[in-house]
Length: 368
Image 1 (tube, rainbow, N blue to C red):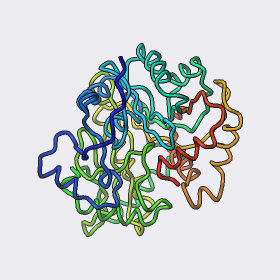
Image 2 (cartoon, rainbow, N blue to C red):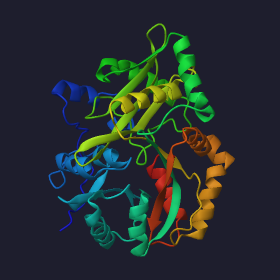
Image 3 (cartoon, rainbow, N blue to C red):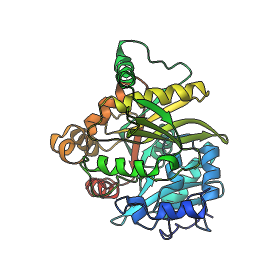
Image 4 (cartoon, rainbow, N blue to C red):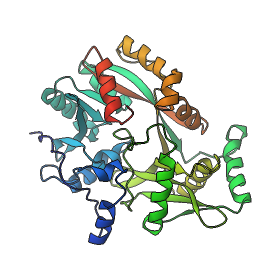
């Protein structure tokens, strides 16, 4: 029997933190959406320990860690797997793939569709998209998830010269990149994040759901890389969530990237190059760069909604949207320059009309 959704109540409780550390998380700046609302992180019907156990076994996709720990998510499933979701304006949106075995996936999707009228499945993989298509959903591409396969990835060649130049530019100015615990630089991270937020198109809250809101605390298996200038001041950082399979970490996905407004644009690519090389030396298999929303939408592999297809292609290029709300084109261009493997991601729903759903999803993500 599938469990019922967990209610979104409680406080932000992270595994492995002492009482003092938890208190420090709770008193963060109220501008951090994750700390200024009351999320669920442990529910007797679907506890965090069970979710993390399933993620470590089956979470081989870039959103898996977020599905287990992001505030406000609800859960459907049982001890064999779960689907993470949220509701907005009376609609149900799932996040990523079901966290379960391949054999369990189809049945869990059927159970979820039986319990939720006309849900929307957001940012799912080709395998999940295929199951949903066979279950009667229309399936549309919603962008690409870029992956670097570290067994043969390198920074050679003219196409990646910009990454080498970025690193050299940083090092020539006596800046340094180092990995450290977040706890060691807590106040600097808060100050840098607030400065970065002031430059964003969406200033009043963290973008969420498709991105998990930042947590100013050390979290299990999350990696933190910082850039310091010649005076020792922090000027940028990139944090990485773990990606698991068969009980172990197989790679990392970029989850938070921020820099001071006056910091060079070379900061982020320099950190990415350093971190990627570190993960390679440690023997990990992949680095995911995350979703490029609405990028390279072609459609055709599955039965799709043609109006929704045209709408998403228009929105990716719409100047007003990129300028005032979210820079889709900038995200696409940046990630494509790494020359990684680009895997299609999908949106699926049995509903025929999606304009209202698209607005509800934008609201859920904090874009509008």
